[in-house]
Length: 322
Ligand SMILES: NC(=O)c1ccc[n+]([C@@H]2O[C@H](COP(=O)([O-])OP(=O)(O)OC[C@H]3O[C@@H](n4cnc5c(N)ncnc54)[C@H](OP(=O)(O)O)[C@@H]3O)[C@@H](O)[C@H]2O)c1
Image (cartoon, rainbow, N blue to C red; front, side):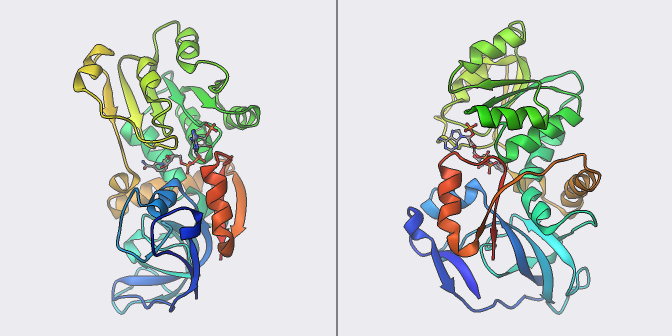
C-alpha cells in the first residue's frame, strides 16, 4: 500500500510517498481501509520535529473509512462497518491500524469526508465550549482564526450555546466565512488592533473567554481582552510558540485563568469520545452544523496540502484522499 512517511524531520521534502506492507491488526485492533484523511497542524509539527516520535513515522492522526479486518478478540466492530477516528498515529495511508475503542460508527446522513473533517477540529470545538470553558448563554467569547477549520466549527458551536461571538480573521474572505458561521462581530486583525476593538465592543469589560489557536502573535493582547477572572484558553500556536508566562501576570490582568488543553485529554475514554462525536454527527445530519471541506488533495500530493495549511490559506477542512 502507499503511505506518507517521514524519515528525517524537515520541510516539505521530508514527506515521502512510499510503498509499505499492508499492516495486520493485533488482537484488540482493527484495520481500516481509508477513504478520507484529515490534515491538521499537528501533522506539520510531527513533520518538522517540533513534536518528536520514533522514525520513520507515518504521519496523520485522523481518518474515516471502512473496517476491512479485525483482531481475534474484537467483537465491537466488524468488516464493512463505516468508522472514523482521531488521535491514532498513521492515517496518511491507504490502510491504518487502530485500537477498536478509538473507532466511532459513522451515522446515517454523515458522509466519510464530513466524518473525517470533524474528528479533530469538531471534537476540539466541542470540548473547548462544553468542558474547558463551558460557555453559557449571554457570555462573550473571542475566537481567533474564526475563518479557519477549527474556527468555523467553534463559532457555530459557541453560538449554539447562546454566546456572543467576536471573531478575528486575516482577510475579507475569511471574515465572510466567520460571519456565515454565525459570528456577531468580526475583526480583521491584520488591519485593526483587536485588543482596542474588543474593549470597545464590550464597553471595556472584556470577554468571558478567549479561544486562542494562533499563539505567539495574539497571546499577550488576548490576555488584555479578558474580563476580571476570565479564561484564557490557548489551544494552538499557528503563528509560533508563546513565551513562558510569569504567574504574577495572571494576577495583574484580573485574577484570570490560563489553560493549554489537548484533544486526547478530553477524549480519554470511550464514553467521552462517543458523547462528543455523537453530538457532532447528530448536528451534521440535522443540517445544524455546517462542515466546510475547503480542499481535497490526492494522498500523493500531501506536500501541496501542507503548503496550503502552513501558508495560512485554510478556510475549512483540508483532506487527503488515498
Ligand atoms: N489543542 C488541541 O486539542 C487542538 C486541536 C485541534 C487544533 N489545534 C490547533 O488549532 C490550530 C488551528 O488548527 P486548524 O487545523 O483548525 O487550522 P486552521 O485554523 O484552519 O488554520 C490555521 C489558521 O491560523 C491562522 N494563523 C494566524 N497566524 C498564522 C501563521 N503565521 N501561519 C499559519 N496560520 C496562521 C490563520 O487564520 P487567519 O489567516 O484568519 O489568521 C489560519 O487559517 C493549530 O494551532 C492546531 O495545532 C489544537
